[in-house]
Length: 345
Image (tube, rainbow, N blue to C red):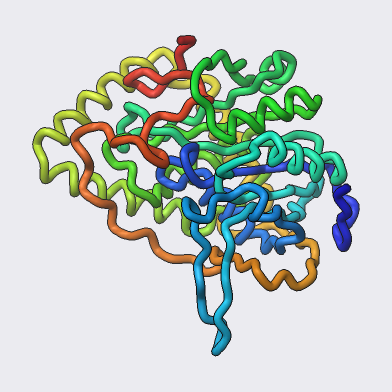
C-alpha cells in the first residue's frame, strides 16, 4: 500500500519519466527531466527501495563527504512534484532514475501505484536513441503510443516495433494494460557523436514536451549550450575529411526527405511555441511554481542541483558505437532511416 504524506491535491497531473541507461543516448532524456526538476525546484517526496531493483555490482553506490560526515548515495528512482504556474496551473510528477537491473514488472507496478494514488491523467516517458541523423539539423523527436485513440487525438504514431525492449517500452505497455494513457517521446542522437551530454537533444525533447502538454518550460541556458555543442562538433568534424563528408551525406538525405513538409505543421508548432512564450513574459522569465515538501531522507542525495557547463564534445566517431548504454539504437521508437524519419518496419 502506497501512502503519500505531505503531497497536496494535484491539479491535472501528468507524470514525466526518464531513465538512465540503454534508453538514454547522450543522457538527453534523463537530463531533460533533471532540467524540469531544477527549474521548478522540485523536492523529492518518494524513492523506490534500491535493494529491490538494482544490482549494486552493476550500478554501484557512491560515497561522498557532507562536511566531515561520509554519506552514501544509492542508485535508485526518485519522484518529485512541481506545479507549473500560469492561467491554467497544473502539476507534473517527475520520475528520474536508472533502468532497473531486475524485477521490471514489480518496478512498473510500483510506479503505476504512485500514478493511481496521485490521480495522474497521462504518463509521458522520455527516451533517446542513436540514429543516422546529422548534428547540423534539428533533432528528430518521435512521439509514439500503444493507444490508437491517443495516437489519433494527439497526432502521435502508433508503435509497431517488435524486438528487444528497455524499461521505457515496458513501462509504456504496463500503462496501456492498466488503462493509463501513455506516450513515449524519442530524440534521435547522431551516432557519430554519442558522448554525453547532448544539450541539443535535451532541448528538442523539452520543446516536444511543451507542444504535447501545452506548457511553457523555462529553458535557461539550454539554447546557448545547444549552440555551443553544435559549434564544437562542427569544429571537430571539420578536422577530419571523412567525417565531414559523411555528415554532408546525412544532411543531403535528411533535406531531401523533409523537403515536402518544409512548412505546414512544423512552422505552425514553432509559431504556437513563440506565442506561448511571449504570453508569459518572454523566454527568460520562468512561471511561478512550487514543489511539495518532503521529510529527511538520509540515504538520498540529488546531485543535479548545481548546473555545470557542458564539456567540449569528444572527437566524432567514424563508425557506429559498440553495445552498451546508449550504444545501439534502442528498441521502442519506430525504426529510423538515414534521414532520421520513422519507418513502419
